[in-house]
Amino acid sequence: MLPEIENLLRLQDADKEIRRLQEEIAELPKRVAAIEQRLAGTKAQLEKAQASVKADEATRRKHDTTISDLRGKISKYRDQSLDVKTNDQYKALLHEIQFAEKEIAATEDRILELMLNADAREKEVKAAQAELKAETAEIEKEKAAARERTAEDEKQLAEWRAKRDQMRAGVSEDLLRHYERVSKFRGSGISEVRDHKCMACQVMLRPQIYNDVRTGQQTVICDSCQRILYFNPANEMQAVEPEHKRVRRHHPKIDAPQAWYYREEFGGDGEVLLCLTNAGGQASRRVFDMHTGRFIGDILIREGDYRQAFPEDITGAIRLNGSWREDDMETWGAEMPMTALDSLHSDLEAARYEMNSRPAKSQSPAPVTTEHAAS
Ligand SMILES: [Zn+2]
Image (cartoon, rainbow, N blue to C red; front, side, top):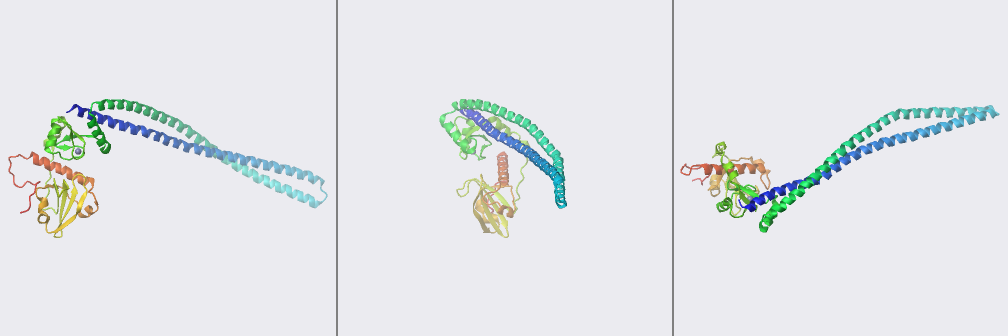
């Protein structure tokens, strides 16, 4: 492996770690803000309870004043009653006194009510105070932990940045620029090659490119995703070794009403997946981009069985396992779902593996994976 590539790999690790730390640091103030918002809620509750107590106290004072005013009136009426000349005047004063006494009794009832309420209010305030105290302690602890974490993250970030600068110094300017441009758009700028494939974009490499990557004498870039390619012999060994562990590939039925095919090239659209379906004496054809699963063109319908209707499409194509219901496919829209695309990709990989591992001398007739036009 070129030393430059080794540096780039370490640089990519550093970039990843730096991004992670930056995200974590950005997250912490949000956490602290959420904690403080919770505290503000409890504080508001306490203030409300305290305000209620104060309001009750004011009402109580007002009632006390009312009672003492009424008592003052009563004693005034009593004094006056000593000086009255007529029976009527006396009766009128007596009536005033009775009225005031009734008022006093009613006000005393209200005070009693307030006193009963005060107990409940007192409990509310005490509970809110206790909650606030507990929460404040908890929050101070959480904030301290967040601050500590941020400080530690920032320390690590500085270290990683220093390491990154060192690694950048070990890569040529042109390659570094390319790496950074691709990283910016794709999230990573370098990709491993395994099994003749770019592991990042899963596209098969042309043999010449693959050889160049393997020999590791020059920097090679993936035609499809533009990432810088590298080869790690240790990983390639692992990928090929557990041959016996590979599950035998299930072969698609020859007479299935729906058949999927892979073509390396199709009408200038590059690699595609074809879906051919027989229904009601007619055959339909859908074309999808191999890498994105994007639906290309329109559904093409011809008379007859798809083998007779689209012989030129099947010739030299690789037959794949796959079957989806017509009404499900109607809902796919412009793109097939990732699960469908993934399953076709992995079956294609298995089919290729099967073709490569088949003994070369064997002249077995009509390989199941590659079909020829029906004669
Ligand atoms: Zn690629």
